Amino acid sequence: MKVWNIGSERTTYEVQFAFSPLFEAALGIAVATYEQIHHTLEQPPAHWRELIEALPPAVQREVAYAKAHNTWKTLLHLLHQYRQQPFAELKSFLGYVRQLPEEELRYQALPFLGEAQQASRRKAAQGSSADRELLQAACRSHLFFERYIAHITSVDAEELRQHLLVLMEGWYQAHIEPQEERICRMLEREIAQKRGMQEKLDPEALVEWATGASYPPEPTVTRVLLIPQAVYRPWTVQADDAGCKIFYYPVADENLREQIDPYQPPQTLVQSFKALGDEQRLRMAKMLAKQELTLQELTEALQMAKSTVHHHLSMLRSARLVETSGTRYRLRSQALSQLPLLLGQFLDTDK
Image 1 (cartoon, rainbow, N blue to C red):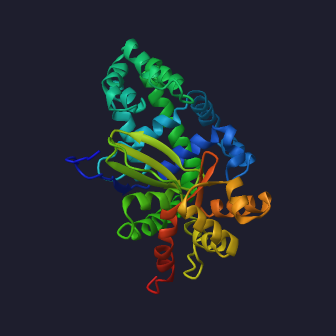
Image 2 (cartoon, rainbow, N blue to C red):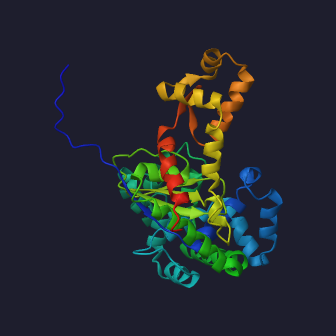
Image 3 (cartoon, rainbow, N blue to C red):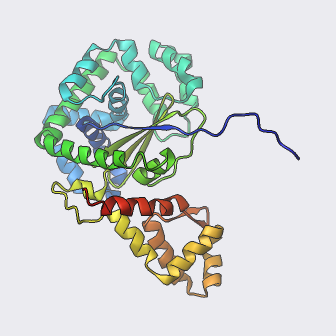
């Protein structure tokens, strides 16, 4: 069959960066109230309990409210409403929340569920129970959106506003303000590093390098917003806004340190070369460059013990050079193609 393509070429998205210690505060509240993942984080579970216990009683009550109703999500939605630059200070953000009309507060608090649901989102914020049900029906499979929408559309708007103000101010003053300068320097280092590669990598490669996950373009998404964070490490958290995909991605290891050692290679670079510095793993990489293979197929082709092959694959996966698709393994060719650029950035004698 002959095909004449008269459509436009495949387009990608624009990548933008944003950073603010206020994101660190809102995400801190989110993770502190999500006990199920505490064992997967860099800080032990006791750390998050201690953070909550260190708060004044009035703020602890608001943290409990946020845990019950997931209103940390509201804080993140509101933080996305900046015009040119993210809210840089607590005072400006709190002032913004105080002046929002009740309907607009509800509207901004409700999740973006796609352009087709935007009219229902507005009407639900105005009090339409039918549109609230439409929004809930659109996210039945989500972990908490259905209950969250029910709360946002039924709670007294002034109660919600006061909750958000006390929660954000209390958490920020207790856990962000004492180390605000250090946090800002860390975020600035991270953004400078990523922007330094923005002209060398295409948007999809840049997103994959920063977040560790591939994100192919979607028809309705014209912009990807990358927001670095340290509090949720090692997780990357995804969110959606109109025309935009948001990634709160973990700050790179080397940018966590206050004193930058120009001779200290990035951990991702070290892991990549360690993973490739083995004859058998290089064999696997070439096999997977040709086609996706299962563990059994690799074991048979290499004539090695399955446990040994699995160990080698684990190293390649830890270095983010290989990923799985169901039961099959495949090479992340884009990650490999980035290695010369990352090595060149590290060896740059001007830094």
